[in-house]
Image (cartoon, rainbow, N blue to C red; front, side):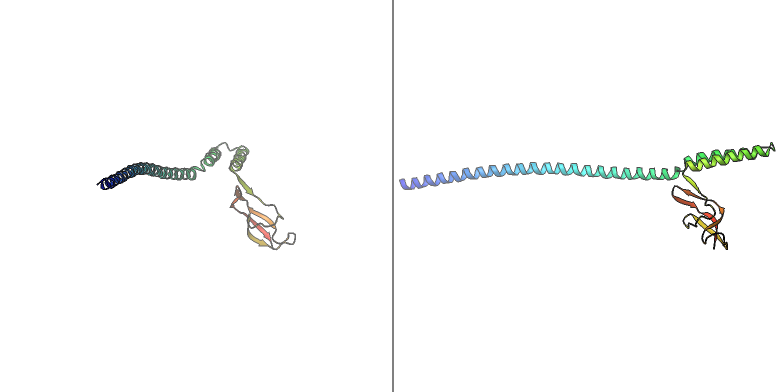
Amino acid sequence: MDKENATFEEQNKVEDELIDEQEKLTDNLEKIEIEEKKQVSELEKKVAELKDLYVRSQAEIINIQKRNTDEIKKARDYSISSFAKDIVVVQDYLEMALKDQSGNFEAIKTGIDLTLKQLIQVLERHYIKEINPKPKDKLDPHLHQAVNAVEDKEHEPNSIIEVMQKGYMLNDRVLRPAMVVVAK
């Protein structure tokens, strides 16, 4: 019987150790589950924050695009306002010249000359330059438009004989080419 008791006690001891081990494992498993739940909760919070940040960023991008579109539209609509203000002054001068009843043609001519100088200043201030080639200059198809070709022994072929109408450039872009007569 003592053997049975000893075996029974050993069995109980082993069972107790197994139960203790199982309890430790269960405690560890519970701790792991709690830690995992904390991590999942933290990750869910981080995902929610990132979603919010994403939505806000998208809204900001849309707002920036709308503002840029509005600014581009305003720039396009009002880009010539400075030019328009300057040119209105020239119009005022021309209207004053037309209202002149004095009959003094020299004064009118002087007024028109001053108005022309004012107009030239306005054009220069807004980067509009004349294209006014000289006779004997070579024809440049980017700046000149040949309206007529004439036989002329004094000029080389494709050289300008006469300027019919000046041309104009805005910055480096041709607004209107100079109309010229060239030699054949």
